[in-house]
Amino acid sequence: MSPLEIKSSVLLASIYSLRMLGIFLILPIFAIYASELSGRPTEFQIGLAFGIYGLTQAIFQIPFGMTSDRFGRKPVIYFGLLLFIIGSFIAGISEQIEGVIIGRAIQGSGAISAVLTAFLSDLTSDKSRTKGMAIIGASIGLTFALSLVISPILNKLIGVPGIFLLMGVLAFIALGVVRFFIDEPLDKKKIKSQNTNDIKSILKNFDLNRLNFGIFTLHASQISMFMAIPLYLINQGQIPLHQHWSIYLPVLFISFIFIVPMIIISERRHIAKESFIFSIAILFVTQFLFIYFSNGIVGIIIALIFYFIGFNYLEASLPSLVSKWAPIQRRGLALGVYNTSQSLGIFVGGSFGGLIANFYGYQGTFLFCSLLIMIWLILSISMKMPINKK
Image (cartoon, rainbow, N blue to C red; front, side):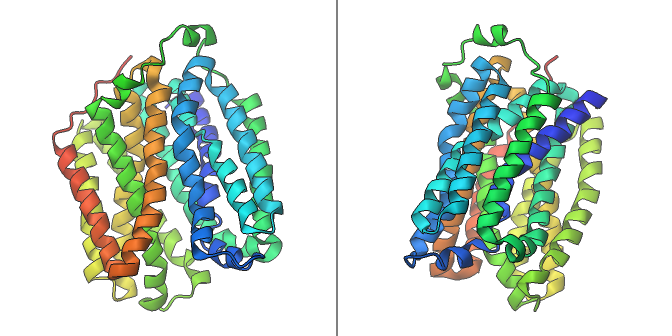
């Protein structure tokens, strides 16, 4: 990667991570906080307050992606970050669950994930794009790990309302980063002349839809699994919640050690498809590792290492493949559909995963995840890698 590509990837990854903070940072503490709000909110209201972020993300990803194709990436990013700031402050100052729900919905409506991914595609060559996406994928993993570490500390210092306000401040800083440190790569006049309204060609593209189902499955299974894994660590590993970071951080570090050579070798030896299929297979096997070998801390750690190896590789590969399959003038639209699928996966993973666990236990959740992953694996076997565009 060139120095400019590395700089752009790191800066955009930092802004992308801000979006994931909206989910990860409050994950370990939100249910307890929300249950203590005035009016005694129901479990449904608490779940809605958490999940509506993903739902409004899903609704607005495509419109934002299409708009960025027409008017440029940066104006849409500015607008999305402003919505995120407004939603963060509304959620932060609200003392009732209804206000938090509204704030979370507005937070999610600033759906710039697709725009950021398209922006990265604009700023990197096809040869370097997977590495750029890998930086974003790594930032997501690190954000998740960091959130588990600092969330209880921040909760003690400033509480959940303070965390929401902090998110707004960070988004304001991100506005400055986009304004002063990242250049718009494309001529806006050229973008405006492109026909970006033909959504049918994107929605009917089987190769893109196969990738969209992949990211849906990846995040639906992630959210479903991590409804169970913390309890496994408490019940099977005898590790209290505030110490779970001591498991996640080493596991993520080990997985990253494997991911870097996987990406390099797959690119150099032209075995990207084999690595892709292998990673999906790892996720499939991991579900059964959790079912049959998670009755002790060693089994849980081994399963987590395998899971994050497959997850991080696929998290980096999927958006790169979408950007290569999509026509250049419709890249924002295609990535909008892709990120919509990701957000729906988060929403479905939380709601359906919890519903299945309620009736069939957490083993039922892992079986649900294995079914989704098996379908994805079957769909991917016949996939061909896209040809790099100059």
